[in-house]
Image 1: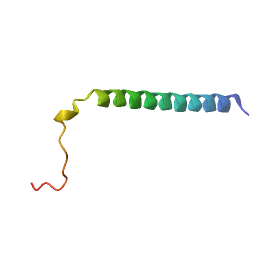
Image 2: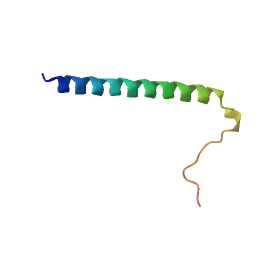
Image 3: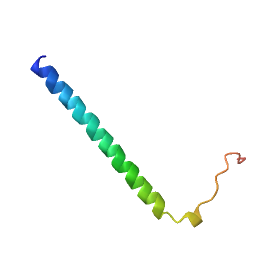
Image 4: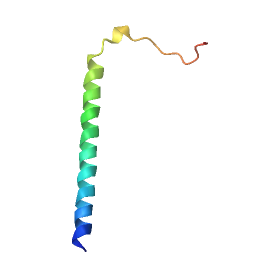
Length: 51
């Protein structure tokens, strides 16, 4: 295999791993923020509201 192809495959793999790591990080942050929300102030959403 040409050296350029190996470099390209390594870079693609690194980008995929980085993206997955960031998604996991943001999911954890979102979960933490949701647990800290004052749920007593939430109201039930009704999509059938007439404008």
